[in-house]
Each structure stands twice: as structure tokens, then as C-alpha cells.
Image (tube, rainbow over all chains, first blue to last red; front, side):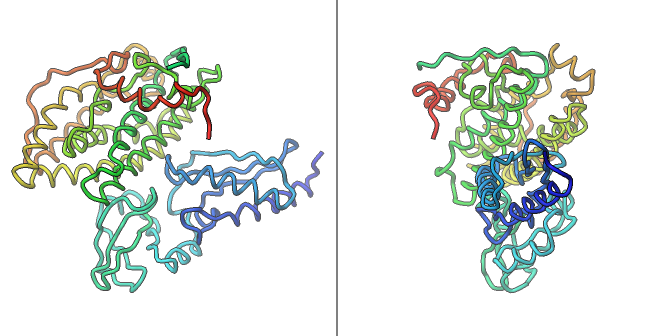
Amino acid sequence: MVTASTSQDIRQTAWNAAAQVVDPEIPVLTIADLGVLRDVTVTDDGVEVAITPTYSGCPAMNMIALEIELALAREGISNPKIRTVLSPAWTTDWMSEQGRQKLKEYGIAPPQAGGGRRALFGEQQVACPQCGSVNTEVLSEFGSTSCKALWRCKTCREPFDYFKCH
Amino acid sequence: MTTASITVKESPLVLYALRRADDALILGHRVSEWCGHAPMLEEDMALANMGLDLIGQARELYTYAGKVEGVGHDEDKLAYLRDVRQYRNLLLVEQPNGDFARTIARQFFYAAFADPYWRAMMKSRDETLAAIAAKSEKESAYHLRHTSEWMIRLGDGTAESHRRAQTAIDDLWAFTGELFHADQSDAELIASGVAVDPETLRGVWMETVSNVLGVAALKRPASDWMQKGGRTGNHTEHLGHLLSELQSMQRTFPNATW
């Protein structure tokens, strides 16, 4: 039987542990930074962690689920249930400010906040994460992972990844 | 080929999810065939990315179809253990890649439909289909933009790229009519607000196609004779070859995992 106060403690412990799990493709970002970690619930049956994929075919989801299990196991929480939720659909607007800053320092241009569909089909001004110039151009809509596009800075000539608005 | 095929009890909702899942899987598999062969590295990645999106959509749809059917068919069983005549995809998506222009034209015709389709399906009364639609809509928007840009580059490019793009459009045109077909099984779901009547998307599809072909200096074929059969399992000869590759591992080594 789980009492209300211990259940709250377990939830916090589980959340803190899961929140440390990083995206295997972009190891500077945790799944909490990304907004992939949606919810942790504690019931008599155990702990359930809800995560949401960035893209339908994101191959990192299996790895992330496994990492969450390991992180919780280190805190003594065994056999958590990892549930994938699709709704509401993930959006780059859920990425934390800290996450955006970490991305930029890592060399990936962060997605523009509140971009959504308008940014997708309208004019975009993406700043180079190396030199800050907005004199940039898109090289390819599709980058090294589903969530990124490939851009080039025309000022410093460096190519860079841009985390797509979604 | 040693594993017996499964039989799916195709209630209207199961069949509906299965048809969309098959579209996404087969088209995703087709574009994945370009991996390592595309004309340039950026395009190789773009095609692989589009394939990944589509196969991701297929997985969600198969999982849902299996759940609704309720006899323990998971995504893998539905993808790997049905024969060609049990596949319900559009004839358009199973057509071979051909040259790069043909692959792009096929993807463009599909994306010009999928984009408004998924947007409309976000309002489905079926919560799971609406959730899958909300994710797929964002992905298909990228596919549409990318393939539209290529149609224009190819059509308005060199004489050779123009010729190839026009040939691809002419050859694939007869497979586009099936996008807008709904049958008796769909009718029930359309009436109850679970599914969108595809006929209502014909206008926006035609407008997108006409606009892009116009800018690309390509001619929209005049013929309105359309091929059909995929939705009921009557496929072109190409699907069997594709499935024999896609399913070979599970058919040869049943229940193999790694």
C-alpha cells in the first residue's frame, strides 16, 4: 500500500532520475530539457513514466525508454512502466530556455520559439551558433537526425545543424 | 517461406487503420531503398529521413489496428506476416523508384494529399487517429515542401531533367485517382466523424499539384482515366517483389529477434 506522502516522494525521486536521462543523439540535452518527459505517476502497481516522441519514427525512443529504466533502477525503483503518449503532439515550443542555451553552446542553432507552421513556410532567420550572424542559408531540409536541418553560415562559412521548428 | 500468414478480421476501423499503415510502410520502404544511392549526400539523408517518418507513422497505425482487432496481432505481425493480396496500400506508393524524378513525383503526389489529409484527421472523433494525425501532419508538411522544391528544380532545370520529370508525372498520373476513393467500409466511419471523406480533399490536392507543376513548367496530364485496386488487395506486380525482400527474415526464420 502506497501512502500519499511516500507516493509523492517516490514520484519526485522518479522524476528527478528520469529528468537526467539525455537524448542519445544530442547528449547535451536531457529529456526534461527537450520536453520528451511528460509525466510520472505512482500507483499501487508501481511507477509509470510517460514520454512523447519528437518525430513518429524517432529511433532514439527505445534507447531513451531503456535509459529511464536504468536511471530509476539506480534509485531503487524497479520495473517502471514506460508509456509513449502521442497527444498532444510534441512541439519545439516545449524545449526549455536552458535547453535552447545548451544547444547553442553545443553548436546547434536552437529552434525559434513560437515558430510552428508559420516559420516552416515563411521566412526564417536562423542565427549561426558559431558567430551569431544571421547571414545564413539552408543546405538541406533534412539533417543528421529527424529533428535537424543542415544550414551554412555565409559569414564564417561554417556549416551547422539547426533544430527544426516543429 | 515457411511461416504461415496471419488472417486479419477487417472491421471498418481495423481496415481503415491498416490501409493507412500499409501506405506509410510501403512508401517508407520504397524511399529507404535509396539509402546510399541518392544523387548527393544531402538528398540521401532527406530520403532516409522521410522514410523514417513514414515507417514511424506505419508503426503507430499498425499498433492501433492490432489493438482494435484485439487478437494479439502486433505491428510486426501485421507488417511481416500478411501476403501481397492482404496488403491494402495505394497502388501509387508501391510503384518502383525508377529514376530520381520518378521517386520525387511519387512522393510529391502522396505528400500533396497526406498534408491536408492528416490536418483534417486531427479532428477525427477517434482519439488515437487524431493523435497520430497531429504528429503526421507536421512531418508531411516538410515532405510536401521538400518534394515541391524538387519538382520545380527538375521541371524548370535542364532539358534532360524536365523530360524525366514530365515522363514521371505522365506515368504516375493514373495512380493518383485512388487517393480520393472511399468504399462502403469507409462510409460508415466518414458518417460518424472518425474518418475524413477523401473526396473533400480533391480540390486542395489539385490546386497544390497545379500550382507546383505550373511553376515547374510541367504539364498536368489531361487524362482522367484512373487505375485502382490497392485498397482491396489487387496490386501491381511490383508489390510482391517488395514484400519478398521486406518480409524475408521473418518468413525464413520465424520469430527471429535481435
